Image (cartoon, rainbow, N blue to C red):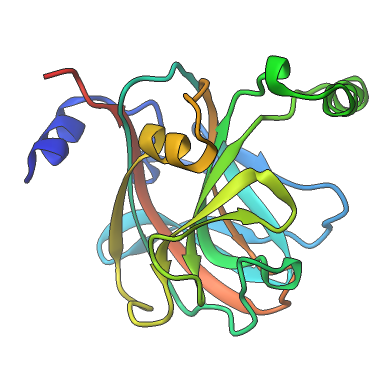
Length: 230
């Protein structure tokens, strides 16, 4: 185990591990979207001797989210493991028609009204009045891409406020457990060119509403921990 792995093991994560959950409501809640009626399916299951979340998507989209509030630090490590059954043949992170992924981790940051224009602030205020909740600000999406090269950063075709980061790409590792570790503070700085605000949510999502394809993903425990100053 390297230094970062040792620090992660010693520092408690604010996220409820999937391996310890009694139900999907233990620290996580459904993440659904307006105008998308067909939902992905999430369930606790045992895979390779450990309890994980299995996600099945067939032309729909939804997720599971843990709502947190974590102040920004110099370094904040997100670590997880996942496995997918396949990538999407029509998947293309640069096009709305291909903006689907068999597996993704969504990191939402707090909205910063001082950096938003008048119309964006007004739109958000309308959402708060109608739905009683605040929209997040910028977001990072760690994706299992189809053709986007591993390590590439691109904005989602829907908004420049959400940056897609390919941490896996293609079908070479399909069917295998893959462990990923990212410093979300460093990634935010690279993606948006500014210091990050607080983290307000971590979500998993498997979606196929644009491509209409099918996939199954397995999500292992997700750890989110600051690295102490040396």
